[in-house]
Length: 312
Length: 89
Image 1: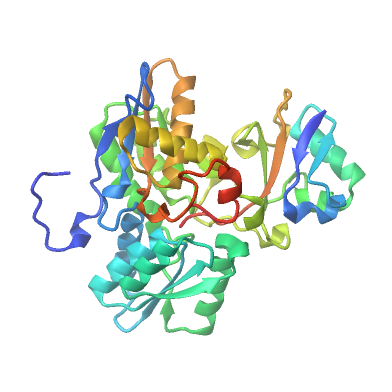
Image 2 (image 1 turned 60 degrees about the vertical axis):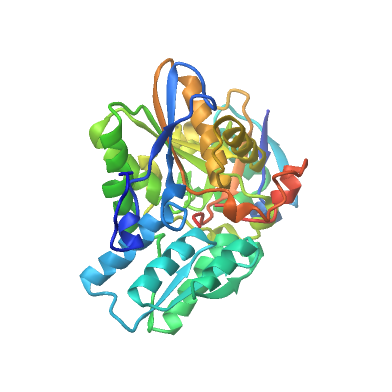
């Protein structure tokens, strides 16, 4: 981040997030760096995605003044879209699972977005399904749809990945959370150009039983932008491991991360342990503020307290 | 002897069990062993000779699609089956 930046609008402050070394969290011969996406204007990596999706739709002519935006999101993408929509003058409706944390819903409403709830037990899949139905019924909606929008990985190819490549002379492992796949696909592709041997590793949430209430496997969903063949590792992280990672990040480095940051940091440390020397970069998608109302920070039984929610 | 964790979406196919024990050295052998005993599983797990698109299989916590696929060797690790779910918030 340049010091004393003067920007015409918040949208000009998206990206260019700092990298910080995690020498206390992950001591040893392997250097681990964290890219702090909480430094984006609304506090998450999704500012990059929201800005890119809206601006590319404006350029292509798909999105014109007078359209309403619609997106399935349990939080961060919605908040980022709410900022972009407000500054560009589009109304926004977000479809979110009913069990997303209260802070997320409140922030969206404060930004002026409308919130429609999907059944919590259906998780993100339920929100995706309901949003697709709404968009089909009402053609005034424009749905950026981060799961299938190529502007999502492109934002990470041109932004996140290019920034890391410019900042470091060597990257052996990239770790990011797996959601839509946008961060891993875009950042991974850009880093492979500069560091051909880089291992692209996904940290994936092990969902609680309560959020796997799909009726059948056919209700499952693989985001169209995600190509698993382009991942070198895809590692499940339990809620306990994520929270342990979070607490260690806070204790060792003073980094107050969101749940996926804990999972990503956990995997980064594990993969650093597999190397003799080298550089691991992990992408921490957001800060802990939006998770304060969750009770896992003090709860002894993390597994039970986290079971009923989709965390990233 | 490999422990295989069954997600809620597949429990109807296996008489409600949360965990099964399969025999075999590779993921394919263990899943075929289970499909032999619970024939309704086969159509859910396999598409032709490949793993079905909406099922994820993990060995030692890693997705077999980034390991050796159905030929991934188990070497004592347990197996987790999960439905493909939309993530991303």
